[in-house]
Amino acid sequence: MFKTILFVCCFVPLFGYAQSDFKKVKSWKAKKTELISLDRLGNFIFIEKSGRMIKYNGDGKKLATSARQPVTLVEPWFQPTIFVYNRSKQHYNLLDRNFESSSTHAVDSAWAIEPILVCPTHDNRLWILDQADWSLKKVLPTTNQVIQEFSLAPENLEQADFIYLREYLNLVFLLDKNSGIIILNHLGKVIERISVPGLKGFYFFGDEMYFVQDGKLKYFNLLTSQWREHALPSNAVQAIITDECLVTLSVTKEVTLYRYTSSSD
Image (spheres, rainbow, N blue to C red):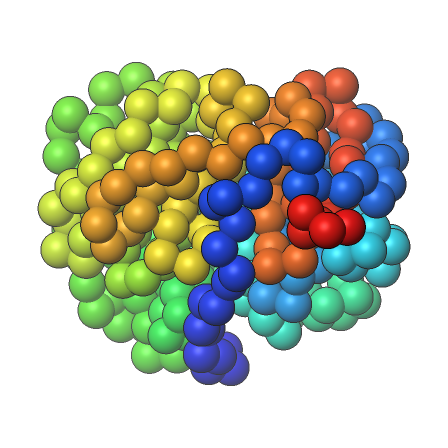
């Protein structure tokens, strides 16, 4: 069903940059944007509450705009397609890079009774969070086979509101809007709990996961469990880095694009 793609993270270290090392390129208003994301080619996807998605390249040029649609989870990294899960209809769409065509696939009821979150994996499977029994299942869609399954521990479920599911570096990440991030291995063991109430999204940069908190990018190394912080040039509630630029979204829904500069610039 899916085209296998090998994902290799090779990024320039940016942790030594100070605020003066960012050069503002442009800014614009994105009043309806709820979440920003990134595809494998370094394009930014702005996801609106209506489900409309707008794609910009690394220079801030608008490339494509999708139609409005019910959206529960969006994964633009699944190049060359964009994965979009719709909880209400229990199906997912694979959109092309320009949002011009798509294919729709149902989440089989044999896989999950209440699939509240579904995301793709690097090996062309699906992870499904089933609210009926609070299990996580890894499914091979081409054969309808559940190849892995485990249940979440009860302490992960108290007043939880899970809004995002992702696989990365053979780990499973769950975002609970009320408490923060839960990181599990493929056997269901909790590796780390990160308290960040109200967080809308997190991202990955090489071996690290990062998110915005208190006006800073906070990085958690998935191999060493070490933390580090990266100052932002302006106050932001969301931010994404690449090997060339930084994009931030402010509380007033202003987007700002920065380039990295050297001390000699």
